[in-house]
Image (cartoon, rainbow, N blue to C red):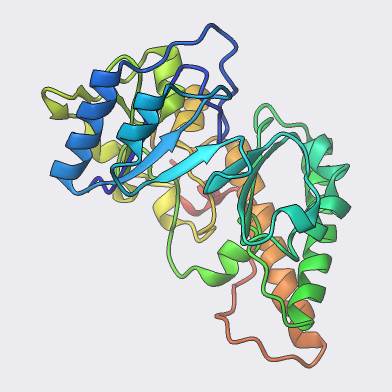
Length: 306
């Protein structure tokens, strides 16, 4: 069941996920389409999120947006969810939700500053943008980066601060899959007036799943759901985004993840295990469920393959 609607306000609205920023010309959503999208969300009882470009919108657009409760996602420090191009001073990001789109190399060189932000930010979300193809050396670098960040998270928890970092603490706090769920729980209204599973599909002009007149009508909509994802439904890397866009690009199917996506998610999962172990080994009690250790990094090994 769809619960969230993202409205892209322009083709140049900033990426907050794996897909790259669009480098073409501006294409502001028509005001009539924006208003119709807001009405659609109200009729369908959907939570609204607006994805902003880097330029100031016309006043009539701001007026229409502010008539309804919503979440702003923008590269603006006043937004509810702040897309960061660089790591800002920690004292400027108190109680903010932040998104960082890092390559594996960029994350490795930003660990100290990122860990400092965990002291003040409400939540930090890290998106790895060079997920595929990934070399074994990149996997190792990411594993080492996670270990260093996990050490910092451990120290913060022992000091009494419980940080929120999607790639590490989400798995500790979750008891079931909590993925992106694009095309299932969340859809995007693009400037062309059509619905897509997420903004990435709009940029390729593929997989339109309806319009404002006819509503959301995704062909084979069940393929976006967890029960129809044979690998993911057996997996307990609950923090994995299970990105249907990356699935589609890398495997040709929205419900089949790539090897790289699975390995990255399990490296994160294993680092979460180490946080729990480190805290327990130092005599502190943390009321969280244990995470079983696994012998694999890709859950396809759990399937019976003929």
